[in-house]
Amino acid sequence: QVQLVESGGGLVQPGGSLRLSCAASGSIFGIYTMGWYRQAPGKQRELVAVITSTGSTNYAESVKGRFTISEDNAKNTVYLQMNSLKPEDTAVYYCNARKQQATVTYIYWGQGTQVTVSS
Picture (cartoon, rainbow, N blue to C red):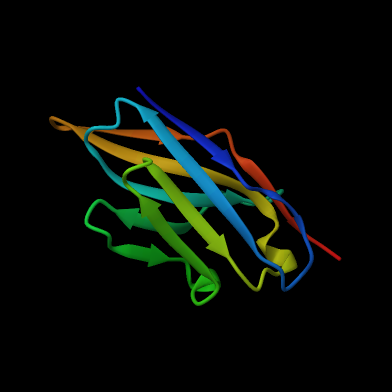
C-alpha cells in the first residue's frame, strides 16, 4: 500500500501563488509516475501535471507556463508550484501515484486539498 498526504491548499487572491506538497509513504518501490489532478464542483476530475520516475513532466494546457511540478526523491515528496492563479483554478487538488508491480498497475490517491482563488 502507498499512502499519499497532501498539504498546502488554501484561499488565495487572483494572481497569487500556492505550493502544494504530496508526501508518499509505505510501499513506494515501483512508483513510476506521480501527479496532480483537480476536480471542480460539477466537473470531472482532470489531469493537472505529472512527473515520471525519469523526471519527464507533462501539463494540462490550461496550466502550462503557470504551474510547475517537481520532486524531492530524498523526501518522497512531489510539489506543485502554482503561480498566476485564476478563479478557474479553484478545485480540490488530488495527488496521484501509479505503481507497477509485476504486470499489475496500482493507482493511489490522496485525500485532496482545497484550493480557492477568489478576491
